[in-house]
Amino acid sequence: MTLGDEQAISRAVIETVADATSREETDLPPLFRTIDPEAVDALLAPRPSGRAEPLTLSFEYAGCRVSVERSDADAVAITATVEPE
Image (cartoon, rainbow, N blue to C red; front, side, top):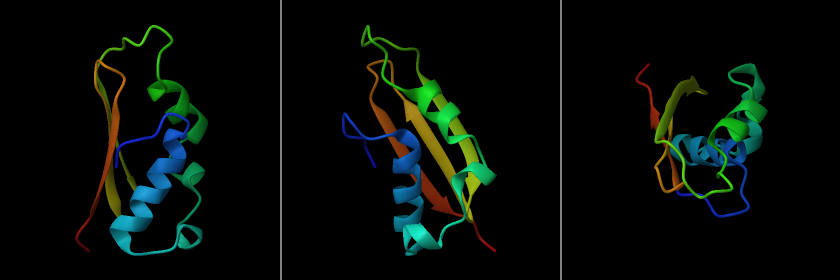
């Protein structure tokens, strides 16, 4: 998933994991039990200058390996891969 301009990254993580697991967003555990959503949003938010260092944040959430990648152009991509049981 690639983010829209106004979308919070933490919200997009939940949507991406729901899609990957074929579950409703409301059926997922709260994201804050895994990672601080405000910290994720602040760390990966677009920079005023439009220039940022590339950054990748990976963690496990709701049975998925989640990867959030920011390019040096401030584009953010989120992937969620279901972990085998």
